[in-house]
Length: 516
Ligand code: ADP
Image (cartoon, rainbow, N blue to C red):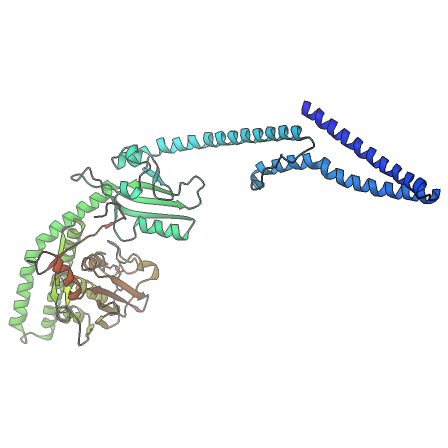
């Protein structure tokens, strides 16, 4: 209160001084006009009135700025702490004359009040956030993990720790990729999605099926397999940028794997009788060549084709099972690509012929020698040509071309003019078990051919692709490396070897800090 009284007194004294000064000047002007200048009374009165007017206006203007300075200072202090105008600088109290103590005191009270409000807001926020946090942590029956902008783990719930066999100390603050090692059934991996979301979107969501969690501790035990859902928000105010939830399906997926292993086991047993059968068919064909009626000759061809198709089916199942179990190995040798392709097409042309389709092979005069595994790459050619035959519909031509592409790789394309692939299906075409619903009822298949072809081409160091228009046909293409490119690798490898051994993997590893 002292400060306020002092402020009152200052204002009163100031106003008094102004009024006195004002009056003194007016009186002085009258005296000066009459006594010194000897002007007559009317002119003197006019001068007194005019000087009164001018002086009062001048003093009023000067006093207003001076008298309102405390109010302006307080106003600036309020703006300084208000959230909307926080960039306003704090008032400078040094130059304040009128009511300095009162204003300083008042402003310090305002600042105190603001900090109390901040504290209340912070506590309320914490009180609101914590129960939710705890609720999620303790009760969510799904493994949940939250990452910050640098992919470090901010939060992991109990279920997650149990799932990956780690403690909170092992994971909190650590890089996600160093802690959770995941493999995906195709190359649309989590790390690629996250990089894309970070680059392009403020908010994004995505789900994956059949993700394998590679745990270090249980080499013998079955790796957990799950579906994964991720949410990304670049603008999360608390820095909780990426959230992942795991839905465990280990039992279901490992049952599928066991079923696959069982099928592979059963199919394996078909190999020996089928090889015998094919041998007898060939023997009959040679023995009876030219002696059969056209009808019996046709039966013979169809028998040979069916045996060949059964053989492809068996090889596909066995190879997929090997790829799944990381047991698929290739041995890359120097081979003539023209020779491989010509032999394969000759072999497959019987299948095309019984469907009334002709295979046209278009080869350049010159092609570099390829570095390939003959048996495995035959599976790729066979699957692509088989599909072209199956999905040719009424069209009667399939064109197979090979050439050296712009990157120096040997590229082979298989073009049909059949049913084609709908745009939405193209991204799934190489996924395991994927079959387009539009033709799966009419045309038999397993959905494994392209999956296997991709794994084999990938292991060769090449790439497989498709261009297709529904109703017009499809072109599948793949690349293999010229032998000269892999020869460098041979030089640095064990000198006693003349081939390069590569493995085909069904599982694509997510980016890992422990990438092997
Ligand atoms: P499938 O045994 O079903 O042929 P694939 O893995 O070889 O399995 O092919 C997967 C799916 O891709 C097929 O079900 C089919 O829908 C589609 N597809 C493959 N090749 C062609 C093609 N040449 N033309 C049209 N669709 C094709």
